[in-house]
Amino acid sequence: MVTIEELVVNHMAAKTIENVCSRESQYAQGFITAEVGPALWYLFTHSTVDALRVSAISALCKITRQSAGAFQSVIDKVGLPSILSCLVSGISRVQQHMLTMFAAMLASGAHSHRLVQDRPAAREAMQAMQHVKNEQNIVQRLFALYLRQ
Image (spheres, rainbow, N blue to C red):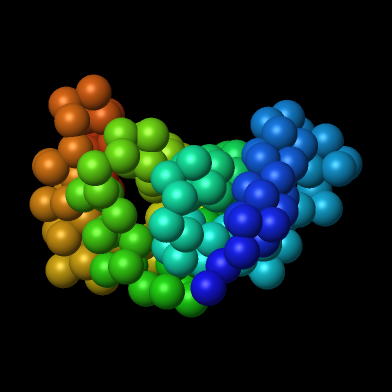
């Protein structure tokens, strides 16, 4: 059982990372490690409090915008199907952050080949994204472009 104090500390930690990583700085670089991404993913997937879940995924998104490798380390650790299952979550802010991370990864080019290398997983990503609201069509188009290559 998670105590109230642990929830508050975890939420404050996620918010701190989110705020520090909002801008590129030497301080933000301290959070761009192989351990922070999976730790934020753990908070996101194991929390029952929506505010903490949104803060954790938002912090991961801010880190990913600076280094796409952070999101790739999460994908490597938990697998693409686990990530894709979050796209059909009912929380629109979570969907937005997830799509932003995929877009950042695709835009970086460094890890996009790994993402679309597995065609069935890439097609599954496209299907999962079809469930997301129409405002995020740009990411679907990016995925479609990469699949055609």
